[in-house]
Amino acid sequence: MGRHELTEPTNRDYHILEALRDGHSMAEVGRVYDITRERVRQIKNRWPEYAPKLIPVLKLKLEIERDIPIHRRK
Image (tube, rainbow, N blue to C red; front, side):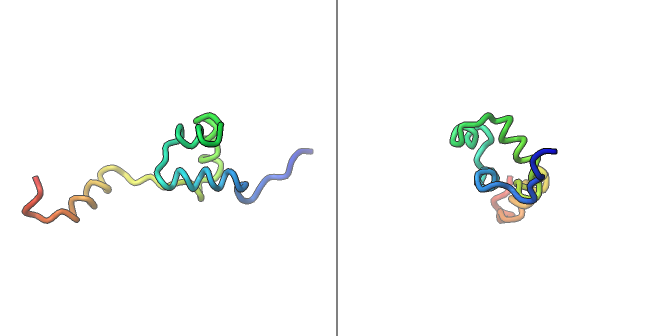
């Protein structure tokens, strides 16, 4: 017997995940909510469907270069 498993994040966890999606670091979010960076990581891993999605660096670089006019590229 124990606590039932949650099917969606708590209000606090949802706001933590939202801050991560907005680009704040795990350390920054931890300081605001007075929890460790490790706890923020655990929350992020517990709710992957709500967590920020990683963009591979190469794909991001190609998308940025695509938006730069050819005559301005290095």
